[in-house]
Length: 132
Image 1: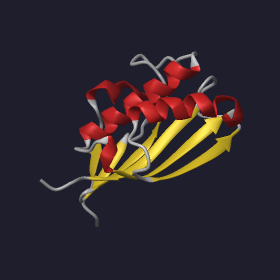
Image 2: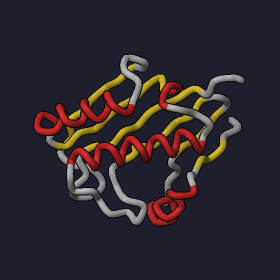
Image 3: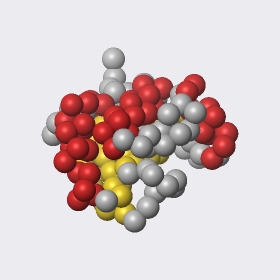
Image 4: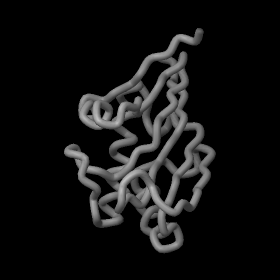
């Protein structure tokens, strides 16, 4: 059996209890992060696309930090987009402001819907914790 640690940032305990999932699982130095979306701490979907995208990145930052990682430690990322062609320019602008450019493999996938109405993006990644 592989040793693994479930990672739950304090701010996400409510969603974990409600949805029964792990925001991240660490195996050795590798952190597998579940998809993060743009919701408030009280689980309300943020309507403004730009603000929703910022919140999704900040939620991911929180999960990474709880697992001992930073954006710079991400090695693989997949983003799932509703209405990708309509929102990609804004999403990319937000990503370029908050996430280091050109530092990981990135795949974008267009989808018809996400877990809750109004969600426009979900960001999932794998990070490797640096030694020292």
